[in-house]
Length: 388
Ligand code: PMP
Image 1 (cartoon, protein in one colour):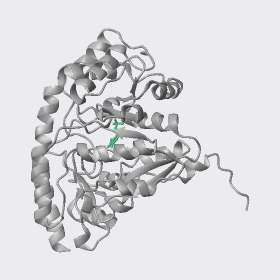
Image 2 (image 1 turned 180 degrees about the vertical axis):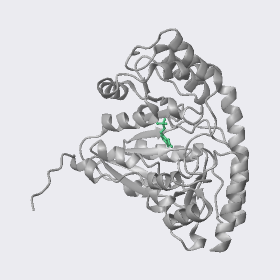
Image 3 (image 1 turned 30 degrees about the vertical axis):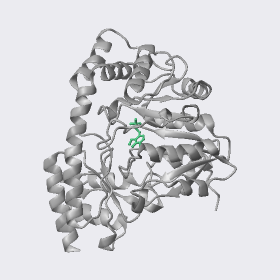
Image 4 (image 1 turned 135 degrees about the horizontal axis):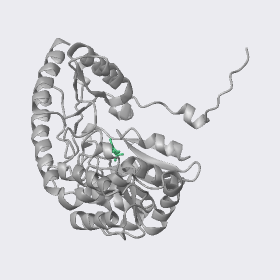
């Protein structure tokens, strides 16, 4: 039989689609589903922020901005980072406004990886990291964390994963999917390794605003780290702006300018009206962020305690809006648990295995859902577990 020609790149053909999608598709065809599946705030973006975007349109700001983003926004971003986390970047040469943190991750990896170089990905991890490393021509090297260390990576685990080809470490704190947040002393231990072995760290700080028990420490503020940190963040989570697609990346000038080359050819600039919205978010949105944070914290406390009472053991996540309980006591795999729970009780969660090997035996539940929905989901999960 004649071989059908494929037009696709081998790299893309070999890439697996995200495991989260299948559950969304299943849930989409059902009625009365409570979704704890999606990783986004349940708040609508504050009105003042929306109004700023509308006003930019009314004033006719509909053309491209500078490739790196509106200068005023870059200045506001560096002011915000400096004031909130004591890190300093030059708005002129070291900041790029991106299409979400997603694009920041993409251009950061593409700017630093030579073919075959390795990037350590601490699992369970955000589903995009490893595919983005692969697409950038690198090799993702997973390191597994477990609930015994509250899903925090231990320094010796990093050291064991190093090879002469290791270029960088992907770090995410507070973490998606586990909610774990690294303390300052834990960050210092990781920093020591990066300095000792001359590694870069891509520090995904998108959940920095959502840290509930301790003040947030940005990796770049630790001595010796500014020059080897690529700080990635954005407006999606803290400011409830997922649909605006706005993020940013800060790095030492040489790296930032390399990223800017990719950005100017592939994206030109982030959407202009969203940049105006982000500017307003930084100028006046902080109070709303604190209110949302308070509300997530309340929901976290209720939800995590309820999961533990049901017998699904769950550490207290220090940040983000995810609970990552163990379902090992049920004897089901995480896929079986998530599928049965959805079909029998109409609660959508994400099976932990989609976040990496050590995610197996867990499920990710987003508690960015109304208190009523959380209470109802707890009832349903309890009934489900008791029936097993
Ligand atoms: N990093 C992490 C850890 C995330 O959870 C997400 C969103 N789920 C992103 C990056 C991407 O965010 P954005 O909407 O800014 O592209």
